Image 1 (cartoon, rainbow, N blue to C red):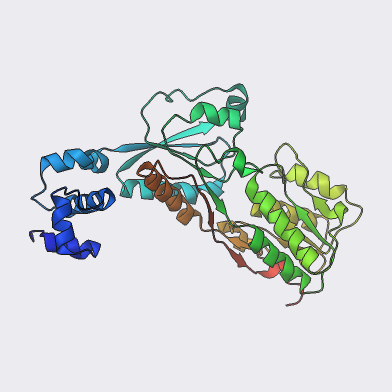
Image 2 (tube, rainbow, N blue to C red):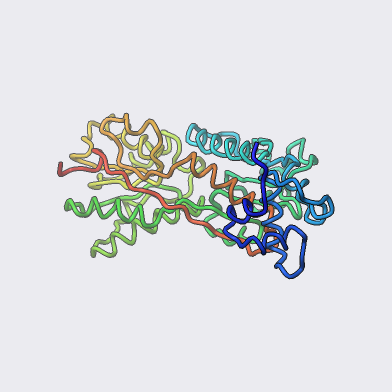
Length: 345
């Protein structure tokens, strides 16, 4: 095995040999941050001449070798949509020598402020996959433990002091889907999604409205289905009830996610309404099964597994940078046009 030299470390970090040599000797003529980066990289590469004093001063061994426990909180009713996100979280945690601890929270537990039994165990970081009320979040979030949220309430700034927040981009991608419908001559376009629930649904609704306004179209209130319902339109009976109540159908529905779009398509088919000839439909999320729908669903690809990995990457960075300001990070998404929105082939 090749012996690691100062030059090897310098080359890896694109620093001068002289700077690296001074950093390895913990010289104060080199900035603290640079010393830490150099010593950490030298330790990872197997540089054999690092002194124990230097390693102790920077707590390098503990930071790199101690297994961190990352706790993930999510609602009990997670669907298959979340499987790839959780896979991404697990893969990235393994890569970073971290242990995954999963806690499912029921609506009753949240409402009654019942904490998981293992909340007293040591944890290095927290990932929150579901939108919980702030009073419950304040119970499960421990002081000085970094937190990363996937999505958040309608006004994300309600929780922005508690941790970093990652959002799927929804405004622009939904605007583009709506414009694609408008470009085919459609004017009566509806929206389905509980905009009281979370920030991402609100962003998608605002993207839909922006497209309508930019093209001089008035969004018709009777086709906007965005009020709060118990299951956020994620159940077939809620979709059926609200669609049955409409006096007529619009030319298209922009749905806040693929589950809503799928149930909308099922109801339309049951009523003998042709998709997309009579009513076009779009979704959001690009779940694996939607391409198999007939017709295949126009949607927005988000990259679930990539998002899971990104959640961990941001959390690991935050563990080492607790003093820096909290962030709201937006991950790009990609509209995917399929048959369900193509009235003009």
